[in-house]
Amino acid sequence: MRHERKLISLISILISIISMIFIDQAVAEDNRLSTSFSLDSYSNYIWRGRDISKGFVLQPGIDLIEKQYGFNVMGNFDIKDAKLNELLYTLNYMTKSDDLALNFGLVYYEFTAHNHRDTMEAYVSMSAKFVVDAIFTIYYDFLEGKGGFFESDFSYSLPIGTLAKLKLASDFNMDMSNSLLGRGTKNQYFFNFYNGQLMASFIIKAANNFVIEPLAAYSYPLTKDAELNIKDEFFYGIRAKLAI
Image (cartoon, rainbow, N blue to C red; front, side):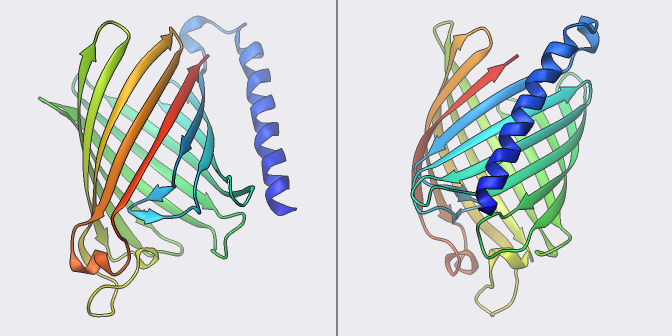
């Protein structure tokens, strides 16, 4: 029943946001709240190299952006178990120049169907445009994990016609003694490289405000410490996003 209540809560949030959109139409354009809805589906839910699901998942999400402030809600629905087993709430503040952006935020993880305690992370992210797009993010879990995680993401997009792009991306990530990610070869929480990921996707602009992105990805451990906790994982899926 708990996951059903959470699903009802998520639907209620959707209805509230749609109502906000109509109210917001009376506000000047430069002050308008930017809203988008997403629905992603994956063959597996891979989080930091870890296989969280038992197969296919659906991940509905909502993004609200008002000037430099953002709020996101995302759910993970495990199709095999027919359960909404995780909700993520993100608050963030963004500032940027022409080629550099900084993002500060909090992420609250609510595990609605797992035997895990809820937890929270703070993060800071820097993105820059060079020959490739680069994003560097440091997370720190100050509740259950009591440790950090570092992500480095590099991507390059190649236009295909006027309505599509081929995106190639790679991640190289590090565990910073986060207890949620497991122990290493010395049976201790470790500070070492964790997982890498390669991804290829097509970003297709189906309409002015609607984008779909089929993708395939491969995640793998980078060190022997990581091999004790994660394994090679191939997954695929499709993302869809509607901006209003």
